[in-house]
Length: 232
Image 1: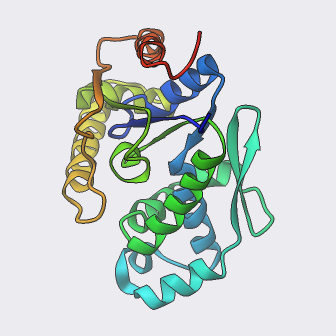
Image 2: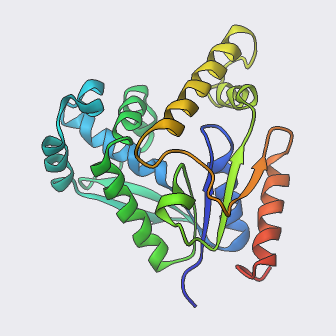
Image 3: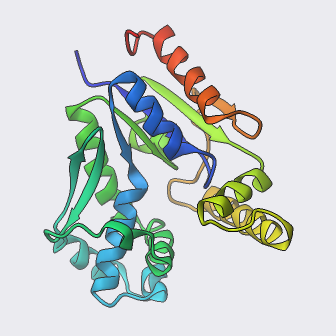
C-alpha cells in the first residue's frame, strides 16, 4: 500500500498543529508540521546575519539560493512527530523566538525557500503515512492527499487562543490587538502571489470556533475511516 497523507490547512491559531498531532496519534500516522521547516530556515538565516529586510527581498534570489544550497537541513523522526536538524544542531526553543518568527514569515513568501521545504515534506510523504499541517499542504504540497481538511475560526477566538499560548490575559485591548494582527496576516497570506492561503476545492472545511479539540479530531478521524484511509 502506498503511504497515505492527511493534509490540514488553515490560518494562524486555527488549531492545525494540535489537531494534526492528535489525528496522527489516533490513526497511527506521523505528524509533520511544515512550519517547523520554515522556522529552521529562518533560524539558519539569522545565524548567518540575515535581517528581516534581507529576508523580505533586500538580499536577492542569488544570495538566497547560495544560502539554501549550503544549508544542511533535515527532518528527524521523533516519537510520532518530527524535529529538525540544521548544520548538525537542534535549535529547539530558539525556533519560537520573535526574530526567528519574523524572518520565517518573510522567507516563507520566497520561492526558493518554499521549494526547499516542499521537497523535504513531500519526501516524507512518499516514505510513510503522515498527517501534515501548514498553509498550502492540500493545494500545493500534497494536491493528491487522501484527505484534505481546512480549519478556521473567528479572528477573536484565534486571538484568544494565541494569547493563552503565551500565558497572557486573553481579553481587553490585548485581544483586540491580536485579532487585528491575525486578520492582517490572513490578508497577507491570502493575497500573496506564491502559494496563497486558500482551501483546496475538495477539502472538508471545519469551523473550530465553538468546537473543542476533541470534537474536531473525532470528526476528522471518522471521515478518515469512512474513506478507508485507516481501519480503526
